[in-house]
Image (tube, helix red, strand yellow):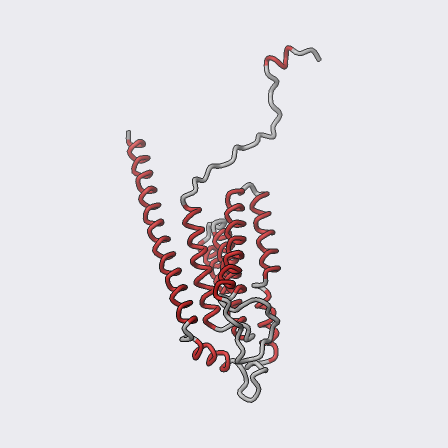
Length: 253
């Protein structure tokens, strides 16, 4: 009897926890999406341009805007860090992680990870085509660019991929320190890629902020959906030899 009561209380607590988690994710999603569209409106009205250009100019030498501030190695580091948000590098990380999860038997997690990252890339392309913001012209670009400016595709892609993988790998560790390390590393890579885009003069700061907000909105939407998908484990395959049935025993050898 005590065991039955305990199981009912545990089931009720889990149901309540799912409701609280759903409300929290929904609130964060609405907040992030609202901030993104508010920012987009400010950009469309030209209200962000003064401080955008002021920050870009502050990162260049006053006598020559083509030269960034800081030592030469900082320029090289910026180029290396920004490559961590390129589509090719992100695709390599995603394929390797999804393949690892798949062959480890975590096919549901692998499918969710692939859908989140691929869908996020498509969303980035769609948003760029909608807003079609020109690239900054106040300073020379230190990196070749092809697409429009808002939101930053490198920033958005890095945020979606690294934060998703960070949370996935965080669940693989029991140690609080290891979990915190995975999350902090994902945050560091996300922030570093975004800052490198501004340092290289290929994005306004508002583009990077928009990329972070769009990535947060998309990630929260995907996590909310995945939270309510029932996790049905795949049937286990027994590799041990099975005993012959009665019908098999009756067959002549």
